[in-house]
Length: 51
Image (cartoon, rainbow, N blue to C red; front, side):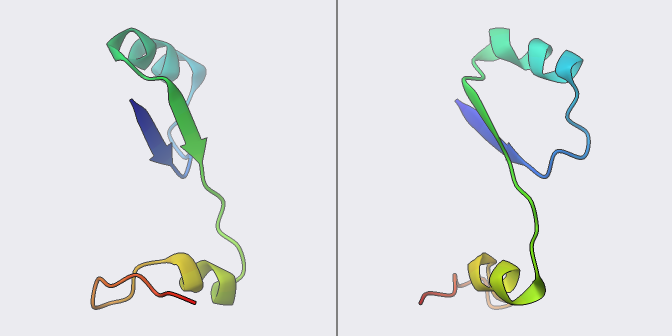
């Protein structure tokens, strides 16, 4: 099991509590400039923008 987070509330103690519950991986995302960020973000209509 994994999780994706912006990392805002992620601290070592929190991760250590989740590991025994099955956490195998954690991905921390970083926002970039508006154009590339919005390219991969769901649109207002909830559809993913494709290239």
